[in-house]
Image (cartoon, rainbow, N blue to C red; front, side, top):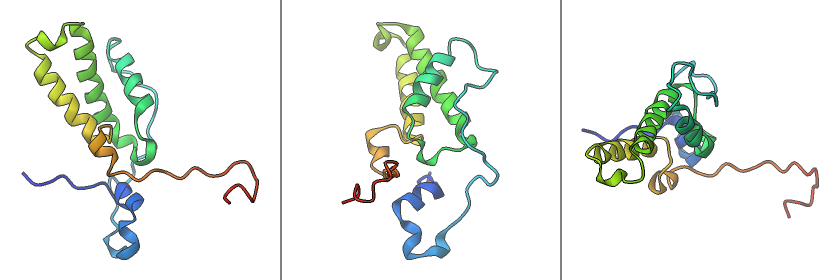
Length: 133
């Protein structure tokens, strides 16, 4: 199986299109902004896991098409939470934790995945022209 493609927004943040603008492509055309509210079809035990993940997501490359990945990660996390304090002893823990690790990596929430995303520069809102100095 080949390596997954890097999202165009991540490539743009890395500066990959500065050297060769013809590499630019559009991923998930028509994808809107990422909604912070959980989908209405989610079960009540999964909603806290959804909120926990969404609060910690790197916001730079998310669109509405990432909602399914966030939902899958939330289901895995909720499953681990449901097992309880002795989760590592449960027979499903290994499967759930491996799947959660995969989804978190896809969403940029692991240390290795974060190194591949450039930080977003915050705009200076103070209005002070000397603040950048």
